Image 1 (cartoon, rainbow, N blue to C red):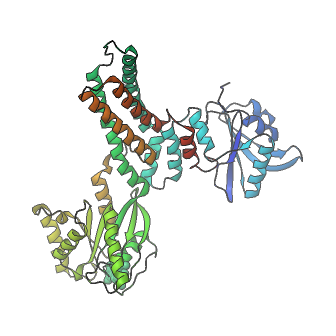
Image 2 (cartoon, rainbow, N blue to C red):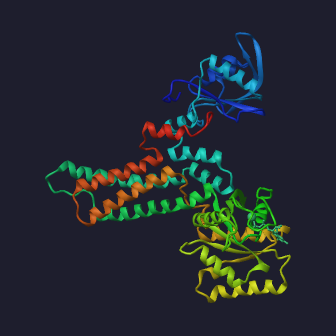
Length: 477
Ligand code: GDP
Ligand code: ZN
């Protein structure tokens, strides 16, 4: 029998509370099987092998009352999520039944699990490292195909392995440096300085790449903020509605009526976009409220990851569109889509003029706004939306997302902070090597870098850190 570090057995409802066809109550710990067997119709459960299913009834031995017909799934340590004996009881999903089942198990020696305690045990028993445990939380929360893929990759340890390898190699050097320190006066060098320099170079590259991926990870986890801006009546609210396929924004024929930002998220081709509708941009706002709205629009554009500049094809010239995009994005490195709306009202001549202006200028002119791809649509008629969606996805994929399937992506703020700390200390070690600094200082910086890297995977962890991570889970996870 495998000895794990916890002596008590925890229990919790592991499916969402509220009525459902089925609910799963999970137990983990040394007495998980015995506690279940005490209230289960098949006493042979105590001798059953792991990875088996058992059908029977749950009964309160005190009153002999049958509580439910259930299926018990049995996992034996260490071949379970927590590496402890685990029992999952599938019962009927009413609140009443679930409460009865939990109460029964508590009376027979189980303890109610705290938030995240199952995952915490999995970590402390060595089934998962910390980054993987956090991926469990991400996986539960993932709501786009891509964020799901990233979380799954992290759960499988893709990113942890890279860090562990790096850390293991750095630890060897650190040990040699410490050895030099032990010899004190005698001027010995066990650690090969050229080898260390090479490793530092490589290590800093790995850490920098992971840090860079955090920008992308953030986008995947939190969505790509795409701001829709343009003159009043261009059709911004109509477009937002069409994209969200629900009437969230107020559509009105009176110019300047959209004053508040209305935003929502939509998943396109596995990417999560957060669309933001803005107040119309006018040079001479009609009143103060509108003027404030215009200011806020400019502010939102500064925070955007992508700008959709929307215009009414019949109300503006290609040169004006360029000038307005240039003004909105001055000083910003922001991908822009020029979106011409109301194709149903525009003349063939107008359409040709825009296509000509945007397609021919793109290669000739050094002006970056000329590079904004042009999309023509009629938002009010639900026409051309697919082309816009394709252009949106192309903009994002074209920038950095191309290799997300295989690349390791950091999505967690805690990991990013630790990587920043590690990067700073690795840089200090390298600077120290270059300037011939003493072994003590090199060793100290290297220790700090190792501590930061170790915090990510949990090779080094404090109780505070663990508590703050695992309490973010809900009970039953
Ligand atoms: P916003 O001020 O930019 O948010 O513009 P709205 O979305 O409120 O739209 C202004 C007006 O243009 C409304 O009357 C819409 O019905 C109309 N509109 C929007 N898109 C189209 C379109 O593709 N074709 C036509 N004909 N009208 C449209
Ligand atoms: Zn509007």
